[in-house]
Amino acid sequence: MDMRVDQGESDEALASAAAGGDRAAFALLVGRHYDFVFRIAWRWLGRREEAEDLTQDVCVRLGRAIASFRGEAAFSTWLYQLTLNALRDRQRAASRQRRGEQALFAQALVEPAHAEPAPDDAGETLWAAVRQLPEKTRDAVLLVYAEEQSHAEAARILGCSESTVSWHVHDARKRLRHLLAAGDAA
Image (cartoon, rainbow, N blue to C red; front, side):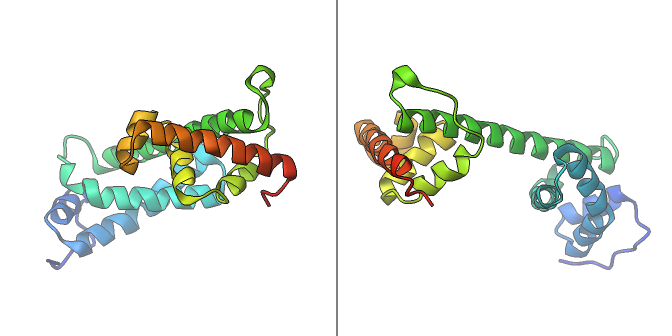
């Protein structure tokens, strides 16, 4: 339900209208604050492409969260907090992914007694090899290593037993050790 939006309306009035389903008000809010969100993302991330991706993510989050804006602070303050939360979420996900990659790489390449940190470019090589695994094995690896789910949680998500997830993870280690040693992960 779009209403006629006055370009001079306050952010708070636009947010209220957008929360009520006014698409024009939402579009105007996004237009006003897109560069603001991008600047924050750029400063935090330092790379244009990542900053653009995060800015798009914030716009999507804004659409979902606009109804929770209560006007207790300025809209720009609330949006800043929304943006920072998105940045933190992205950093946590990246950190979780790096830890999962390093753990899987170490287990796939070397025996546990000889585990060494993965090289810097190991992530790309590793995930290229993971993409070659059978679907169910790949799914188990993704949940356990990239998303840091327990075997029990992964089993619930995949609709199988915990022992089946353990088998897939074990199978992945063997297959990845072979793929990575042979250099077939290209």
